[in-house]
Image (tube, rainbow, N blue to C red; front, side):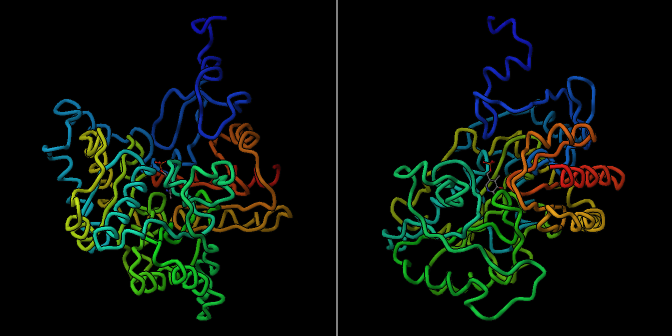
Length: 432
Ligand SMILES: *Cc1c(COP(=O)(O)O)cnc(C)c1O
């Protein structure tokens, strides 16, 4: 059959690659025709609640009128212009907004296209900063296990070695330094003993390799893709002190945690310290268009600028794309104009109550909630493909990974809709 005779879905299965899939064995895939609010409408007319916020970014729901209007308006004026030697209001207005809501010390903004690229940019900044300070040997990174930072090379090198399949890419990946993930969980009492709270291992690693390490990068408080694991923010406060003592930059990857998802505006806000560099993405445009940024403090930015060559060696073609900037500004305006803290606390409270029965199931290892993130951790790995069909019957789109059946509902999810999501999760936990 020629490609033109294939149905839409057949064409998709024979020619389009999907995330983390085997082209020889593509799993069940739904054709989506339309999105509105919490719903996506499929080709057969059925509607599903997008309990994933489309990989954690669609926090105001699909096709939010304020965001689509901002994109339309910008489209009619200036869809794109290069950022070399030129600037524009959307980039400046978004910058003002970001400075308003992010940790105070972060004053310099680098706009880029996706989360992975923002991690690349952060790591390049750290290396260039160290170089400018006279430490050309500091080009490696330390991180914690079970992390996830994206799929490009340098980002992948600091992802968990097992789930990131480092053995497969051996020789092609930069060697980095790993410590166990922070052992004390969010909500547990902090333990001062460095042998138990993870700081001892971190200190040993950083001290032994300080002359090679440019930065310590990790996801603050919530490890997302690496296991939906929530850990104690005191780990980050103490890591800050260690980094300061050793001249190592502290980099927080807030791509998943930013913009209210954890119950704070940023996971950094659970800490008493601030990072040197922060990566933002995912929810930045409310899920309407790909965008990300890397922010840093004056010390790092001016440090890079004072070195040789002084220029920062990065500049994507679509840097500060005006459509993306306008979408992000509209999304952040929406967020800060509402009682987002109350909204997220409401989601958390309801998920706590409605997911609790899963604790009694034999196959369930743990149930946990933080802000707008609800997780049922199973004893065994769960098949996303099997979950698909069952969740579809329940009118919910859920895509578990690893051991975790989880949701990150849009902030506009009503209590009734959230009950449908949690019912779907409980059913998956019982049946899979
Ligand atoms: C999703 C994610 C990334 C990668 O972002 P992309 O936009 O997919 O490149 C990096 N870090 C964290 C913590 C993420 O959750």
